[in-house]
Length: 357
Image (cartoon, rainbow, N blue to C red; front, side, top):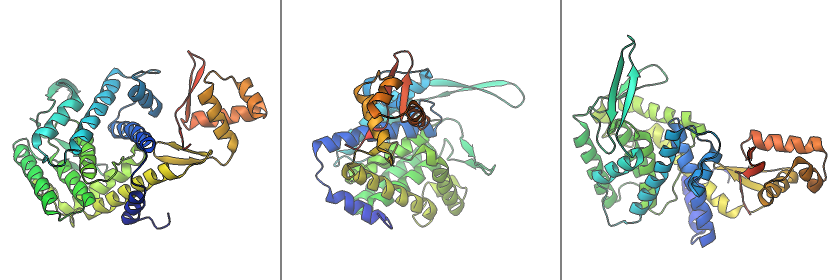
């Protein structure tokens, strides 16, 4: 769509309603993988997109994987389902207990962090699942500045203010759902109420708000992490360094983040629209990107791999009627893009990319 706007994206999406059960299931599966992979990848989780897909859909771990990353991804998916179910109960107001329950589910249990100080001494502290922070937290920006979040003493009152504000604002209808979600995200991040998991909870709460108001859930893509952080940073410059100011920031003050967020939501919703409407043998999807193969052999090869996972290179050559050199080139490019993975142990192919038909 030329000159895509948020309004055009939402209009196009609403014209598709109601979706068929099959389209709903395909969208739900795609979102589950994309959201969990990206939200955790932003925070340093090392599971690949393919590993995430197999773990969440089939409960299996493939290849080498960090145990904590597997546990974190599994817990993330449980938390996503919990949030999604709660968002459907529109007559129930948001509570701080719900946010803390999400956090407890996400982190699963208390754990100890060990760090080495500059003088070489070891220090440690406990991360409490579902409990507000007990130590001050801050971040070093990519410009080298230290940015302080709300103090442990301020946090309970500021979180109560945030939830009370949200419930009242939702009731009054003063803000659009997208404005509500952006403002909640920014204010929450400026409080940073927990020792760990704040970014993941913020992105869950954005989708809680959008879903409550009948809009599709969205994904902040890890490949565009710097755009996300820069938009927050520019809003921080407008709002100033005082945490309580950030926790009560206005839409005008967070204008840079609001512009970023509106564009993000527009693109994500329009991609959902395309996911449902663009049906073609050569159109596939990978991590929110529409892949339109110009050469039909790519799509043919992917379908062969799906139907016959133990296909050999010689089989591919015979089926496609092309040279071995051409087969190797196709296969290597699919592997390099992470569209397929080879299981050397089982001598089989696993197709990660999703067909549109």
